[in-house]
Image 1 (cartoon, rainbow, N blue to C red):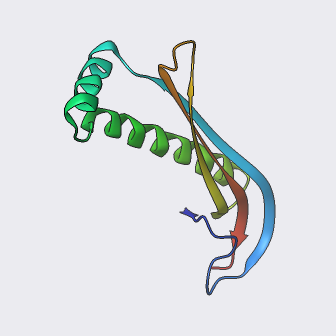
Image 2 (cartoon, one colour):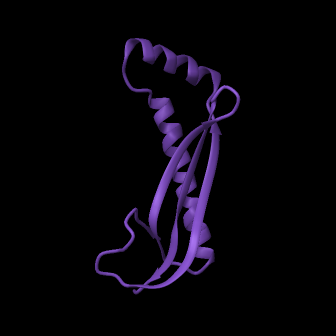
Length: 107
């Protein structure tokens, strides 16, 4: 299924709008990941473990959104927006939300 951040798909005509679809995921960071990330904050560099968790959360949210669109009969999602938030008392959990408009495009 095609998912795009644009409101239209170049060269394709939208024939039906189904409505807004969403996908959400919340994942927690563990103690060891937090510890090593804090060391990286001091010495510099990228945190590969956090990047991987973030990538997994994004992929899950997008997949859930696309699955919902497919259930409605859509073959594309336009206007996709990704939001990232920390949640929980200490901000130790990451929430990723994907939303867009489920549509049918001409084949």
